[in-house]
Amino acid sequence: MDQQASTVSAIIRALDGKEALVEVEAGGCGRCHEKGGCGGQQLTQMFCASPKTYRVSNNLGLDIGDRVTLEIAAGCVRRTANLAYGVPLTATIIGAALGTLLAGDFGGILGAAVSFALSLFYVRMRSHDASGKFSERPYIVSLP
Image 1 (spheres, rainbow, N blue to C red):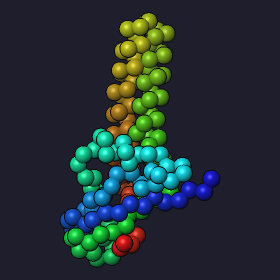
Image 2 (image 1 turned 120 degrees about the horizontal axis):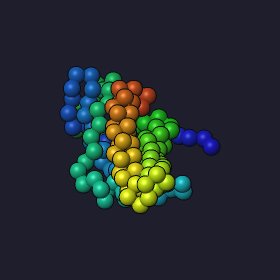
Image 3 (image 1 turned 30 degrees about the horizontal axis):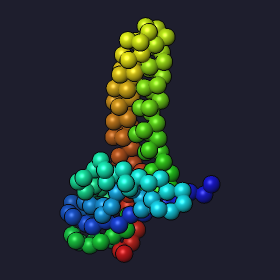
């Protein structure tokens, strides 16, 4: 299956040296209504009332208030979703199963809670590790 980069519209809200702080106008990748779209935009609107901002390179020398199109490399959204949702879910299920085998119902509850907390810590550490990688960050591709 051929993956393509995800794009979204944004507005430059602040400048910091060679970087710009951009505010994404809509949650998700904008492909919600297309075939194969995940519907993530509705989820982001439900859980994220405040606008999302990202730090991007300002190689085009743009100014505050400029509207831009951001792009993120193919596969980054999928890898991020797998990390954010898949790891905690898998860890919780495995922790509950092991806890149940070792100590019954209480062990299952405790195993699920502990493994979920550890998985959140792991996800947090991994997300900080990847935040410095240029290939994992959104970048400006054009002015709309």
